[in-house]
Length: 110
Picture (cartoon, rainbow, N blue to C red):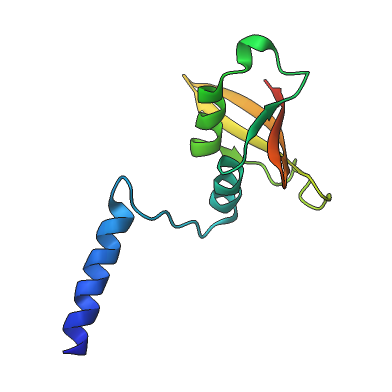
């Protein structure tokens, strides 16, 4: 009886995980940091050109990007600085952003 309840629960849980509106699991540091960054309001710094102040571009960095932890400053307080890389049309692009408790400030996109 308990096994059948567990299997039903597991099927329901895995179905939710794989669904579009399902639960997202982030076990690795890259995924956890990007998920945290996506949850905060977006602020653009003065060094970001107006033509690059595109929230869709930034969202692609935050969804499919890779954080370079060697170039990032993860020890600073209260804002940590991250270097996020994203490949678009065969070109590597970099975004440098400060992850603060009150929002995400995009400093540079190159």
